Length: 83
Image 1 (cartoon, rainbow, N blue to C red):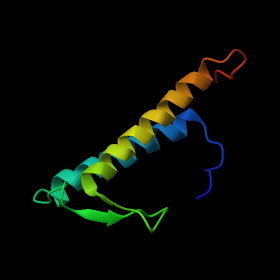
Image 2 (cartoon, one colour; image 1 turned 90 degrees about the vertical axis):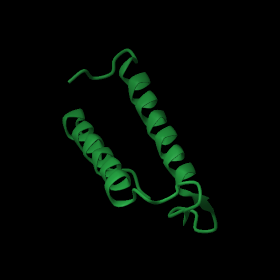
Image 3 (cartoon, rainbow, N blue to C red; image 1 turned 135 degrees about the vertical axis):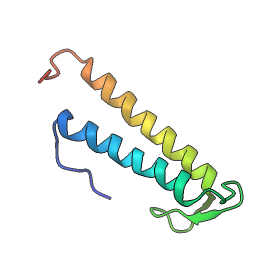
């Protein structure tokens, strides 16, 4: 995985919201009968690791909270561009 090229907030935030809207729709519309505590998937980044779908969604939420925290902390640094 490689970091994306630098983008403006005006580009990043709508894409973040779009991806999460898609994920929520997928989980609720495409997987309504799936038991998230029984369904297991292979980690796409570390193929030797398998986890339950519910755990994966929890990891994704925590990962996203971390990114949001990082962005907020960065924006509060003195001298950070405000444009």
